[in-house]
Image (tube, rainbow, N blue to C red; front, side):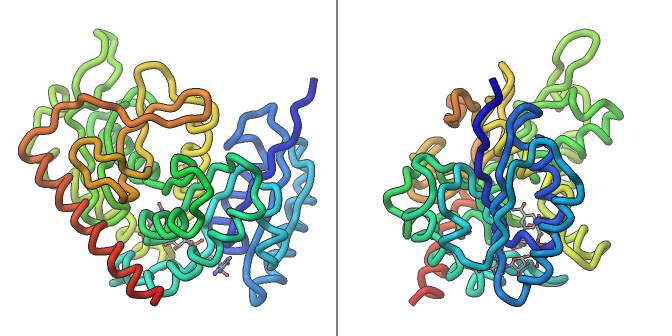
Length: 332
Ligand code: NAD
Ligand code: LMR
């Protein structure tokens, strides 16, 4: 029997990421090849005509799984009945800016959209915030939507996770699908900590630790980390626009694994509400290694954290605490 359609909201749908993301969702990349979807696309009035153009293209592409499109500048109409919300709407940084430089413009959007989601989305709606500063926007959304369960509000660090997999795969000249269990700790910012201490590669002789295969701790502890931390800026420098296809694809991965589960023995990175695991202060949206089953994520527990890593976990937590204070100062 055909499944009931799932309603997926994409905010900022007339923007660059939106343009890459909506066809992926309509093709089943996010929720699977047998899951019909109804797309809800929100943007602001100056982008209404462009948004309508995206809707026309979705119709023209004749996606078999796409059962309807709502294209609107009305936040209540956009949020009504949605099961998944991908929050991309906001302003991207330009060359030379840090992601938190777009804080004042973007956090106020997340405060106001929180109440629309809280009142009008389907019960148990899963939310991923993509717009920067992603962790802090998600935190503001959570704080101003107190009736949405905190476990349902997350932010995207899967792009950083995928970037780390990509760097290891290039360095070792192995398939990216054979590399697993990297971790992005903390903020989706240049203080994030891409950690390979538990990562492995599938080889004909079984799974081997990344450190054993790379045989270059100096590279892993320095250049690898800064490359992943700075990849967003490198893309902006090269494209004069921030990443879009990789962000869209990673947002699909994030929701796909959250809803459909992570493979046995594999974890992914998600920005989730901290419960104090790994001595990360509770009450931040912080990226952790998680496994997902039955539509729920769980932080992977018990991983060894050496002194080098500890400092990096704390540094990025400190930045998130500062961002939280800054966000509140922008809202008053
Ligand atoms: P963009 O400027 O191309 O598109 C953003 C869209 O949001 C625009 O169409 C704009 O009109 C719309 N918008 C603005 N305010 C809105 C509001 N209140 N409600 C609904 N829509 C609104 O930008 P983009 O390149 O698509 O990037 C979007 C965001 O995603 C930026 O903040 C960017 O920094 C961030 N980003 C995050 C990641 C990540 O990994 N977390 C990766 C890439 C980009
Ligand atoms: C990215 O990581 O590519 C995005 O967050 C865009 C940016 O500002 O770096």
